[in-house]
Figure 1 (cartoon, one colour):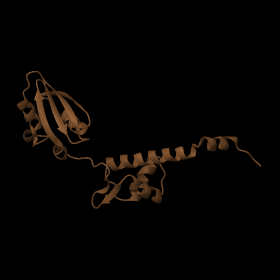
Figure 2: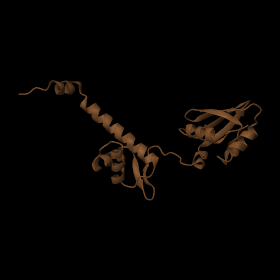
Figure 3: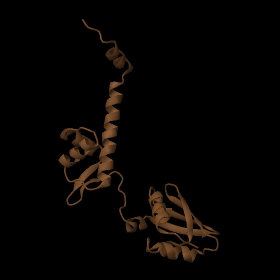
Figure 4: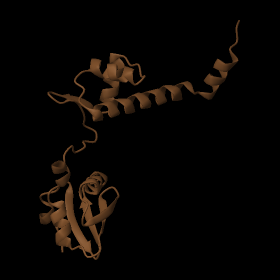
Length: 171
């Protein structure tokens, strides 16, 4: 009888389930990345894009992954993640802004949980003056204002991105 020492050691260390789990995690992350990059309308298209990324998956595996990731198919939009819906437009982000306040050369924006980074990134890329920059947590953004900037000038600069921002201003 042939004894394979390497296979025995691998089974002893119980690495096969870990390898399979890592493959599933990698495949599921790739699925999320593909869906975020653009619409995918069927599992055949998803399997093709995964194959282009170097990941082989059967239709049954894709069905299980889509269910585990809480991804559903929406007519006209393709597959959409239901687990953590992400706003796609600045107007969607604007609905997540709860309030804005100022103190000296700083401003604080409170958002719904999970939206602060997206809002801050949009501000950093779209608003040049009077905001120098921002730091975002999960639901709070710290704005650093230019010397001499007023709350009104900041609100005016933010209004094109977030039309209702002035209604959320707290003195």
